[in-house]
Image (tube, rainbow, N blue to C red; front, top):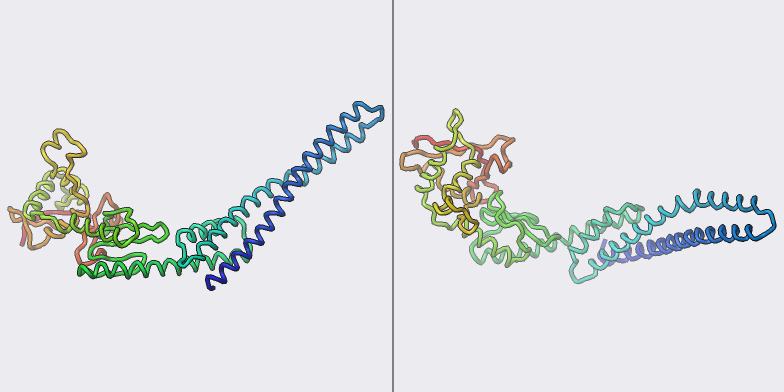
Length: 345
């Protein structure tokens, strides 16, 4: 369905629900007025009976019974239902108006349309016309997101190409070298990860912001001057201090935590402060592990570190494994759970 046709259908449905809401409001007002009138009439009848010589006991009793029956059978059951329907119709009318407005601009307002779509789907009220509109709104939202993603992807591709970097993947996930970019066009944010390690959790969904985050994290992870020999010596010393299993393995995450502490200054060890802490992220450790834990590197004692792949239960558990990127893209790698040292061959 075209945007114009969908807007017309939405506006017709808004008219229908507006009329229904007016009717429900009118009935609710009438019932409330009826309750007030019955109460007033009951009091007046009692006052009249008290001042009259006529015997009105039967009349009073009959009036009270009729009033009670009307309240119990009609007013009390119907009033809460009417209030619920009025609230539901009000929420639907707001959502339908938002959807109509979101579709009327030169480009679809994805955020407003997504919010309207969610409200329509969650509404307790249902009818065939509304169901059909919900399907059409969801489709319009999907197409708008695809158009936005295509425009964003092309702009990001050109910006990266100007720096000799190729963009891979398609919305909502893109690959920039070893970095994964997960986009959310409804929230207008992106998550940047090195491999599977999140390095920037909320990046504004604009090309300049994404480029800045990528360049900052690439420099912080892949452009450091790390001494491979010293790095292996430090990891080996950590491994020596940890309790080994029978096969000489230790958990890589536990080793990483001790490794971070080993890299702190003596001053930090005696008087730890936030300002004195030297950061060493999991992403940096994962990058260094791949760079230095291979057959071309060994420590001064001729020992080489080996990474052991994770079991199914360990993979993806941040407390038991770390994703090590071993290729050109963020998904070219494996989860490592244990490390061990042995003589290099």
